[in-house]
Length: 119
Image (cartoon, rainbow, N blue to C red; front, side, top):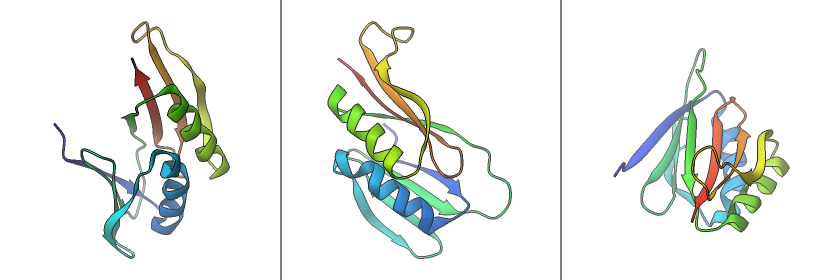
């Protein structure tokens, strides 16, 4: 089990505002951090962290497993309202498994953030 993952961001406070709105339907909140350095969200069985980074950022893909299709939908809607770019609307992704349901967003730095449910 992974305890935490940390990604680089170009604007720490912009990313915090984005993730606070996007993660709100999932009940995930900032657990701790330090202004101008990093923030950590408690995502249930681990932490999702992002840290201020200077220079070029190489986007990554992170998928979050959620408890229902409705939460996938809520994650996508909240992210779009928070300013994300749509990178794949909620829907089945049977290429992965017969019951895989997911949505994809690009955060302010182009990281591909996914919420998925696989019954």
